[in-house]
Length: 456
Image 1 (spheres, rainbow, N blue to C red):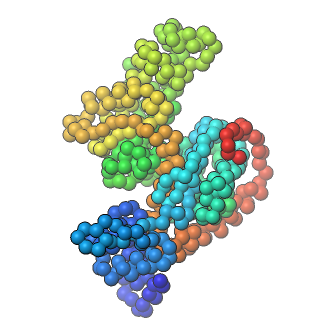
Image 2: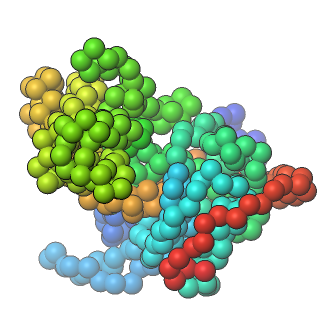
Image 3: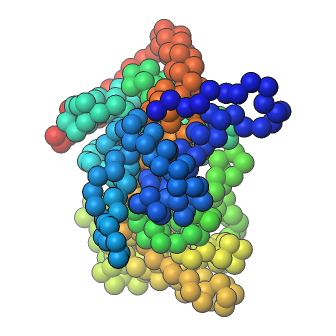
């Protein structure tokens, strides 16, 4: 249904009829998409718009294919209302997680639900072009198998470190700095040109936090602290239901916080991360303080963080002490954050935190002991149950939240596809030009490890 033209000589600063109509269309669509309103009566109440306006906007949304109104709901004393549903099958979101030693890919609908996912080993320090080619190959495989006729509405990539960003920019038109080995490689440009869809890059801690927020334990809370324990220790913050990124997208780098263990003072990463666990475990094996780890070493095995965790689960005192120290140091940092932020929920993630309960128990003991009673009265501290899916689900939600943000939605809703957004059309052309220039430069292309599994 066409929108009314802009009236001439309108007052300065006054929104046009088209702008007002787009805003109300977007507001109603988001109420339906988020499940806050499923009938016309609920839409009138939640949007505070009149019956005629709601009816007109629903007719427009139905005509352009963004919603359907067919199923009957439950009657409450009168005629059963028709349910309004957002069409999640209009497009798909391609997602990937790039870790130092692993690659994950998936494809999601417009609700963020994954249709499938695939994981394999890689070396992220290898040639960027080789890994980019592998990502493209896997994306092509996912599309052919699960969405051969569905347009790609967005691509979202999770990467190991912080990704600097400009909040004023709706769509990336060049690859931001995120890893030294990828400097100068047109990763974003390659994806935009190949799939004709906008691309988002976010840090792994942000995507995992988003995954937990929308599909994990954080679904029912407004304020959540997500802590990932690994070689580096990072935190993600959900504040009033939204991800807090910070000025440069670097919020949550708690691994740089100074901590003290005995007579040693260093960063949380150095004294509580998986490198410390591996280092102390090897020392315990070499000195005989841990007979279990010493036996592993004697038989020619390696002693790393995983072996220390397994030994702790088997009741090895030295290994239990090492993990307990890590948990207490992490707990000190988390307690400071809890006292400042007063979250509903704290979630621990990462292999070390999820394979046994020792770190979780030490964190709980420290946080409950060092936080104000009001902070801990209803506070829940647990561990993630999503595993490797968290980053993929979170990456999908990054793209979906961005596409349906009112600032973006108002400029594409009438065309019923974000690919028609005028700014993205310009970005797409710029990315094509940048990619052509970058790929014209000679580059070495060493191989990456052979892939396994059913993927190509």
